[in-house]
Image (tube, rainbow, N blue to C red; front, side, top):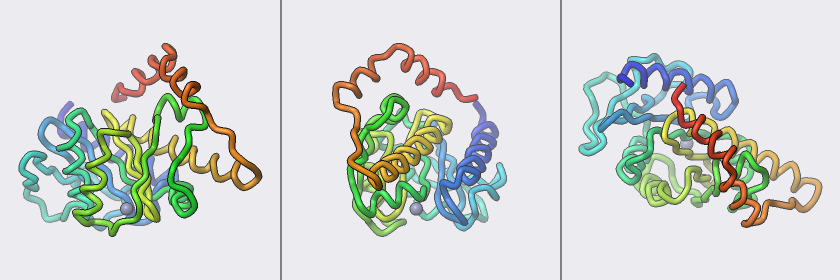
Length: 219
Ligand SMILES: [Zn+2]
């Protein structure tokens, strides 16, 4: 994998994120890691407008930003601290999915409700509202990245991580789908969710293992 591959991959997933309505306008920011560098979306662009050469390379150990006329996303610290905290993390996706945001207005703990959610995402953590772009938010997210691959940000959105962009993207989609399902069910009754044992059984299924392996492949 070269830096050009990573840049092209970022463009591909940036467009998918927009196509699936997971951000609107210039919202959200995404990054992927190659060795000691992360490549991050520039500030002020709608994700689908970013060209391969415009992703900003940031040295993870030093935080040094490569020479470019563009500024990195204002959430640069959230991504940087995340990679420092979790060395096996290959990508971070921060979006503003509408059902996730709606969910955080009324609830905090997203239950595990169906097999895909259990197998692909697992538990989702929650952080109360913090002012975006601050050290405070960056530290709060970095504190949790080793505990779960998805974190709801109260009144704000969602952060997912993965070994690569594909995994982080699928997690974003599944968490948004989960929030949508939960809110739809709650509108008409009391949702019945998976028990801890049912969740553990899914994790132990060999076919699910296989599916997770498939997801870890880049293409
Ligand atoms: Zn945001």
